[in-house]
Amino acid sequence: MKSVFFRFDGSINEYDTQSGSLYGHANATEAIAVGATPFYRTPAYGSNPAILEDFSSPGGTAILFDDLGQRLFRPDIRFKTDIVAPDGTNTTFFGRDITQDADTFPNFFGTSAAAPHAAAVAALMLQANPTLSPTQIAQVLKSTALDMDDPATYGFDAGFDYATGYGFIQADRAIAAVNTRQPILRTAQNLGLLTGTKTIRDSVSSNNPIDLYRFELTTSSNFGLTLNSLNADADVFLIRDFNDNGIIDSSDLIAASESLGTSPESINLKNLERGIYFVAVQQINGSTPYTLNLTGIQL
Image (cartoon, rainbow, N blue to C red):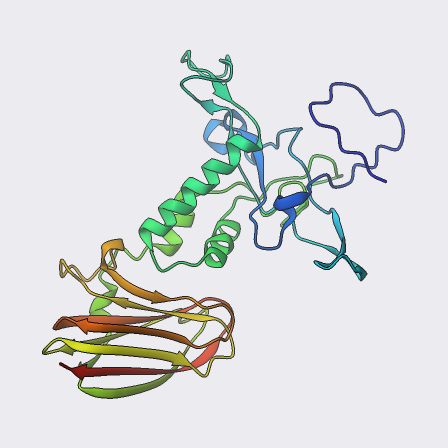
């Protein structure tokens, strides 16, 4: 049996295993578990690498049972914590002021303060690239993080460790890595007028994560799209460049199909008005060929 203490000011004199205490929803496969570092112990304040809060829970907690309550043949130990974000930042009405900043606003500490900062970076990533999936956001946050050290182990832990995950998030690098605020729609393959059905066979991968296609409707049409023949997850988006800037703005997204895994994707719209449209095929996990069918039936 393992005991986890919350808000514990005492000392553990025996059986202090220094083992993982991260549990519950934070240990879920699709969750992003966020550790905490005080803002004044980060590179911006002269501490490189950032230093972990001593209360930040390390991962490594074993999953012993499946969803049906059956004991697993082998315990599932997940790569958690995922990332670390800053805490100790200002609030307007709760917390207590600290001497590490010059203002008199109260400061909020804890992983409950750090997690919203990571979520804010994810929101900025989505603003820069509205086609991102949760999996892609998590991957980029981890791949652009600044490595940190697990203070409970000997020597520097290069790469992932259970206390600090993949490291301290870097908002500038994460946003730059996904930024589509450039006229990528200008690079779309022109399919010309869509009257009837057009079929395209191609592939997406980590080296070529997005394929773009341009087509035109000369009159209002019933529009249909299918994406199939997948052997890894890919999604598809219908886009209209309303301000003709060549950039995928969030308001340009007309429809999306984001089924999980290799399930076929489809978009069907009645009475789609005439104009120029774009289709984006987006890699989600792995590399996959695909077959894209576009149909326009004039009204």
